[in-house]
Amino acid sequence: MGVMKRLTNIVQAKANKVLDKAEDPRETLDLSYEKQIEQLQQVKRGLADVATAKKRIELQAQQLQQAAAKLQDQARQALTQNREDLATEALTRRSGIATQLEGLKTQHDQLAQQQERLEATTQQLQARVEAFRTQKETLKASYTAAQAQTRIGEAVSGISESMSDTGLAMQRAQDKIAQMQARAGAVDELLASGTLTDLSGSTDSIQAELDRTASAGQVELQLAQLKSELNPPAVAPSGELAAGTGTPEATEEPVDGEVVPDQPPATGPAAGAAKAPADPFSLDTGSAS
Amino acid sequence: MIVRILGEGQFELREDQVAALEELDQQLVAALDSGDESRFTAALTRLVQTVRSDGTPVATDRFVPSDLTLPHESATLAEVRELLASEDVGES
Image (cartoon, rainbow over all chains, first blue to last red; front, side, top):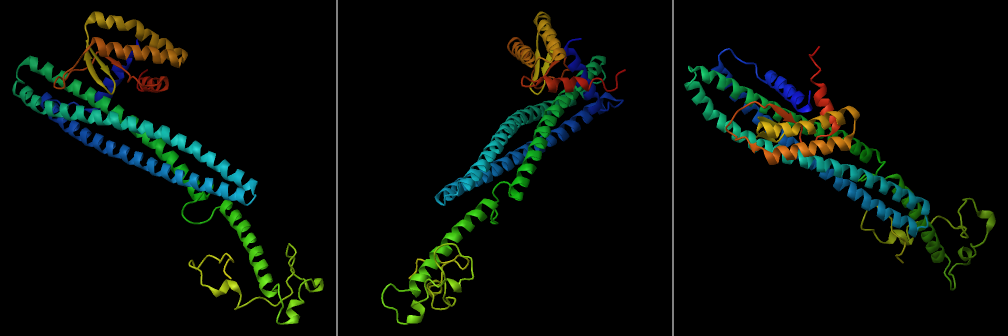
């Protein structure tokens, strides 16, 4: 048997399940009508679901775009700090995001297609329901004629078949939504676990590393500044302090570099505390004199 | 004869026009059996296009069952296989 005939049998078998035929064909007409109204509502809900799913994908794509932009910045920042390893890591993650975005685009296209189809289905269904409503009254009125019974049977079979077809269209749309939800969940997890850059504010590992490198640089800078303050190039007012430089036996801290602090810890009058920084959580860069 | 394109609607065709679809239908069967996706798509596309061009769309206010049914134009081989598999349920 050909595919076309087999499919017809399948759709009509489904159609018979959609509608439990009542004994009186006139009741079947009313039942068909009710079922169609029900289905119309279902299709409209389905349409709303598709739109929501599409929206969610769009939002996720936005988040991924932001994450990618951030990684790009981080890569640049890492390079200025001579951290090629970190820059590579950031760009690798960024290309991972590109892959995710491609997947999202495919799904977005599929959902858009489903949306279009369901919109067409809704319009057709609406027109059909309206036509059926008026026709069923005519059929009921002429029911006594034997021919009308056949016509009722045909009309009901036709409408059940259409409903079964609409059911298939809705199922397709729901499958696509389910696929989209599975992927969306996975992307959410990725975003949350920090495998991709977390945009909620907590720093990811690349950022932490960059911050560490940057703050290490700042520490050196501030150290150098303190040193120059405590060791004025010209005549020092107190010989004791000025003599501090280069006394190796006093060193305890394994600080890298040539600076060996031999002074009491810099407190109050130090440059850093002189001005209150704008952001209470950010350290002064040490440029204040 | 009434031919439905799933997800699209019904079309009315003359007997001789339907006879012309037979050969394409057989190609569809062969492609489904062999799993040849490109052959399947080619046959399905031609079937759907022929029904659309030769047939007359059935009016919205006419309620009739179909004699033949076609998958939607964009249906994949796997989708149609799955659809056909549902036929086996309840059959001996």
